[in-house]
Image (cartoon, rainbow, N blue to C red; front, side, top):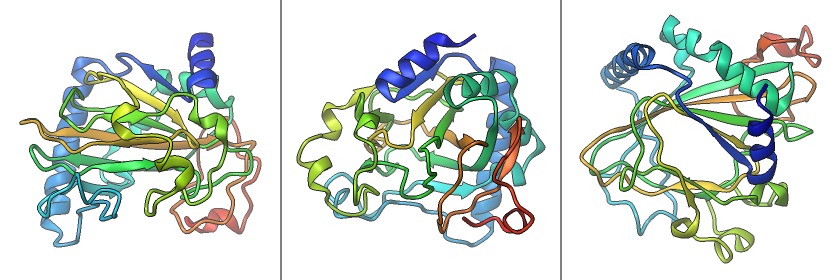
Length: 257
């Protein structure tokens, strides 16, 4: 059904699906997004996930911020329905197969004028799987255009596989001597679009210098045929379609690793 998605994803390491969520659904999800932001602000917790790296010192100011929380489906049933969206899962199936497991979700709000940047990095080291089936599906609840800190990707970089020290918290010669964020691929994205990318695709983003907030929810998914390696990261192991062949009595009793 989505052969074009599979072809482009295999070739480029990413795929943009247009209009996965319609105007009415986006209105509902954006309201829930804003409600989550209000709630985490009231919590008194540190919700600023600013990168704070030498790699972003030149692009971020002292006041730069990005508001963040994990697992939006724990806040809102509408967010759980978003994760279970049929078209989103159909596209995911074309990319990683019919056994689809939710690892986690996370919300990012880049506020106007001061939304912080992210350096070029790979995701695999945060949540590695044996067969590198981990993908991100980034649901956009705002437009994402020039000066808004949109995601930038290095086309075909997933074919390099796992690059050591590629988590973006230190200089990696293989990455940062070879690729520049300003030269990487940019995609203008509309509200309701979903950007899928591979865990080994190099990606990052500039600061949000616009007058508009950039609102995204990242859904991290992997194949139920694959196995998550040891990791410090939250892993919900929630099977959204098919079967999780590596679930055990012991590992489903914890949400780490």
